[in-house]
Figure 1 (cartoon, rainbow, N blue to C red):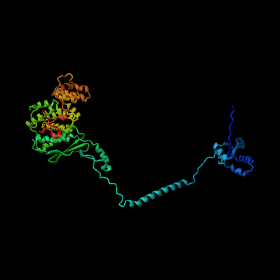
Figure 2 (cartoon, rainbow, N blue to C red):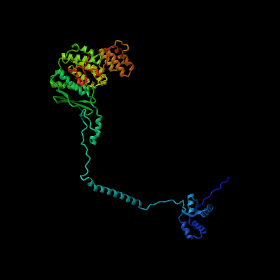
Figure 3 (spheres, rainbow, N blue to C red):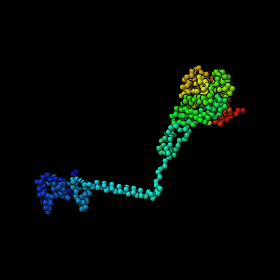
Length: 487
């Protein structure tokens, strides 16, 4: 089926005239079509192409006009009107346009510069006006002038500071010191058991070596630290005699070295010398006290320490008694776990002071087991393992072998499944090791025989106590102990 092509009115546009001869021909053709228009006006109109020759013309006529102009050598085109443009032409509201004419916008010379100068000048004027108004009106609102912001003076927050001194709050320091305050909050604190050991050493030295003739003469001054080094001043008669430095973080050998320096200073100040010492097995009663200590029951350990205290009063300061007492405090630390009254630190300081004093009395004595036991109970496990490497396992006494196996986590040596005659200490250490290793099933089996004997038990901390008196005992007020009352 043939479609009828809908034709739309358009306009004829003369695009270009190639030569003057062609121009004369085009003028002659247009003069015939527009006899009322002078030839001079037509020639002037087509001088600047493109130009619209017919504003609105039927398609048939427009195509014939384009063919005629093309035969004369000119370039012309018929351009259909757009729907909206045609509608407006019908109403007489729109003049026809030549679509091929490019739109060129050429601003006048200097227009942009003048516009920028006007806007910039206006902005500057407004700024100057506002500043002038503010300056002129400030005396009216602030007759005494504007006072500057008050800041606190710069504080010296670096270097050495007293241990335990609270850091200043961020809102109370100069803004330039805020970063130093933040760093103070993460500064490493020294082991709090070190000053307790210094105080315990002074108490023991005055009570045992000087027989209580001097009281309160020696003490450690306020500790200072910069996070890397700890300074411990040593006071004699309320005056600083000397001070020594300990690298941080504090190690167990560092505490022992500080204790030895403290004892040497007190001995030099009083001109004290170690008294004559008896042999290792020369004093009767130490083995009996150690047998009580090795029962691992805190009440029995306290009885053993009481026996050693009695021996100390009888025989004077002897390294064997002090060594056994240091071991007793090590076992007491182990049996009083977990600590419910936060008193284990004082017991650890007392055990360390006894160990240091025993070494001062006999520097050549072997106290590796006591040192390893105290180090392990205080949390210095690496040092404890290092000290145990120098001890021959099978040459040690049975209780020491059990403790070595416990510290080194040797479950094979602590196994009681094949040993029906295992001691309570053996069973306790095995059960505790299995518990620390997370083996709950094996934890119960070593302790099952212990519950059948009413004399064997491991009372908690709050049921323990100690007797009052004696230079080796920590005072009840400081230890949070109550006197043990038995029926």
